[in-house]
Length: 136
Image (cartoon, rainbow, N blue to C red; front, side, top):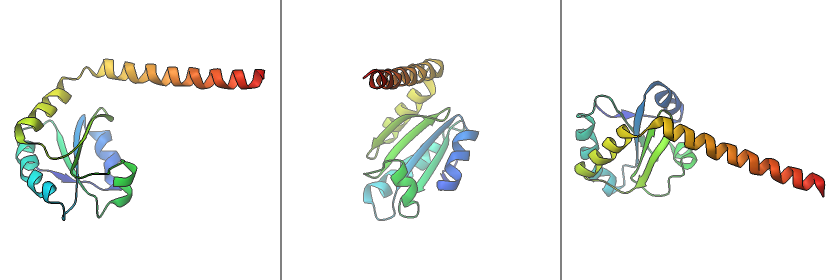
């Protein structure tokens, strides 16, 4: 599968419609980005079950900012709309394959359970603070 250029408008639908999405944040002036691009493209051809997206940080500055991109290239991986990997820097093909395999092997029931537990703990601690404040 070839890489797909995504924008602020198309990223959410891309995540909604696909189980696994990798996103490469890059810019034309970035030499490491240019070195990583052929690797990313070649690996994308080996994994038909994964969407390989690219975001041009120059054209999509708001999206890059919202994603917290401070260094490029940055690679992010989403599984079932959950960010499960984010790392700046170019990877070689073997490293990228390792990340892809790790993302595919994730136990998403466990990931979703951990997220729900963290959200419950946050809600409980927020609720506890407001009770303490109202008791004062």
